[in-house]
Image 1 (cartoon, rainbow, N blue to C red):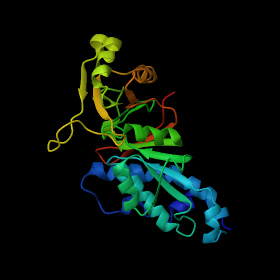
Image 2 (cartoon, one colour):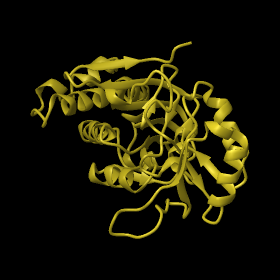
Image 3 (tube, rainbow, N blue to C red):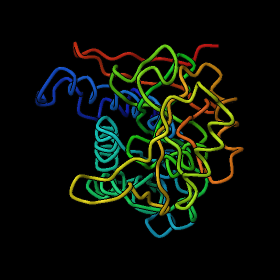
Image 4 (cartoon, rainbow, N blue to C red):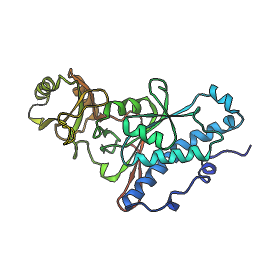
Length: 287
């Protein structure tokens, strides 16, 4: 069998620069960033499996350990799911619903998976995730992140931390010198705990606590945002975050806080940013 390389696989895929132009240079660069991230991290996995999988009958695939991919949410991740769907179609003789499973971080990402004809699985049944691709609301030079603008932070963190490698795909507006540069910190809070949590936050951070707001739902629906886990979201501002792990641990120590939108970098290996001029930046965590 001819040697399978990433380059040989990529040549069989549609080059991103030959695709129809999107609505703006930024959208084109977001697509290019996602395609590049997917190619650079998923294709090596596929190349390593093809020599074995190409000899199997469809019945034998039921005994194969599948590749599990986490798909997050956000306008850039849309293109990552699109590229993965193309890869599955192109290499359909070795990629199928038995050996490629996608797990979602929320309702939007479930739809992305299904729309691209990828098989949807659950993290409960497929806990060993090879790669997770997700967006971010902010990302610092060490690739620590703030996530939770879409109120899916608990599910997003569960998928991200289950992955061997976590990859951020976003636009360049999410690249910041430090966290809370422009975003508040979302925290997921048990429904009857916001008052207690706010009291504890005031004790913990004092005058540094500038904002502590329960996130409201859409204008036509009265009340707070309800997460997929039936909790509420509070958005807090305690100023610039430089020690991300410390602040995350402080917040998690408060009873009633289920999870925080601070993602200290544990396994994020790279971030791909689409720029407004149409280019892509590939960033690795600073040491």
